[in-house]
Amino acid sequence: PAQTSPSAPLPAVAGYDKPCPVEDFLQSVIESYEYSATELSSMYSNLNTIVQGTDKGIVTVHSVQHETDWFDNPVETSGQYAGAVIANTSQELMILTPQAAVKVADAIKVTFSNGTEADGYVKQQDSLTGMAIVGVAVEGLDETTLNVVDCLVLGNAFAVKQGDMVAAIGSPIGIVHSCDYGFISYIRRNVPVTDGVTRVFYSDVRGNSDSGTFLMNINGELVGWMTADFSSEQTDNATIFMGISDYKGTLEKMTNGMPIPYMGIVGQMVTEQAGMNGTPSG
Figure 1 (cartoon, one colour):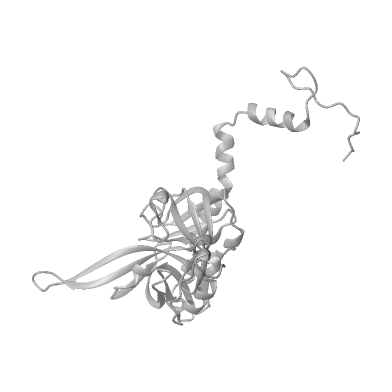
Figure 2 (cartoon, one colour; figure 1 turned 180 degrees about the horizontal axis):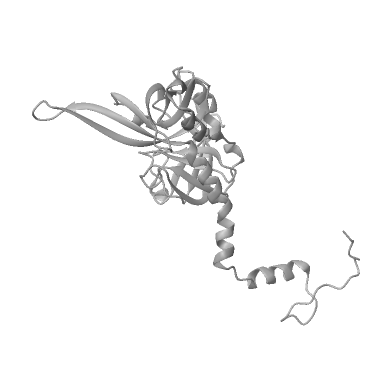
C-alpha cells in the first residue's frame, strides 16, 4: 500500500474547527455508526453455525433406576442429563457427563441427536470434579448414527480471556440440546483445589450444573464445564465453569477406566498477615 507522507494533512471531521488526529476521527465514526438488525444477525450467524455443529456431539444420558411402589410393583424412573462426546476409540464412544447421571443409576441409556438409543456403561467417575465418563459400544450403533455423531474438540482453557464471547451448550436451561450465548465476565486463576490449582471462569450465560452445561469458545472447542462449586454471595448471578485444560490428564485416565487417586491436600496462598505471624510466604 502507498505510504502516507508525514506531512500529509490530517482528515477534517464535521464539528471540528481544524484537522483532528486519526484516532479521534475513527472514534467519531464508530460512535456515530448505527448497527441494523440485519448486521447484528450476521454477527451472530457464524456463532450459530458453530453451535449447531457442536450439537451433534451432545447426547442425552438417561439415568435409569429400578424401584418398587407402595404395592411392591416394579417402577422404572429416569433422569435426563446432557453428555458431551469427547472421544471415539473405534470401539467405544466416550461421553463426558455429570456424575449425578451415573451415581445411583441401575442402568444407563444414551440417546443421540438423531433419536437412536443405545445402552451405556460407566467407565469411571470422579467425585471431586463432579464428572463421569460413560461409554457406548460402537458395534451396537448403525452407520447412520456413527456418521451423525461428532466428537467435541477439547480446547485450550488457558487461552480464554476476560471479555471473550462464549456459548453454553448441553442443558443450560435444563433441557438437553438447549444453548445460550454470553461473555467471560471474570477469570480466577490458581484457585486451590485438592492436590493442585485450577482456573475458574465466571460468565453471564445461563447454566444448569445438575443436568450438565458445557462451555464452548468461538472456535467450537470445549473449554470447560459448569460447576456448583466456587460460588459466593458476590457471584450469585454468574454461571461458573471449571477450565478443562487443568483436567485433561484426569479425563484421559477416566476414559481408560482408571480411578483418580488423590492425596487430599488443599493448599492456599500465604497472606501478608499470615507472613507476619511467622508463616513462610508463597
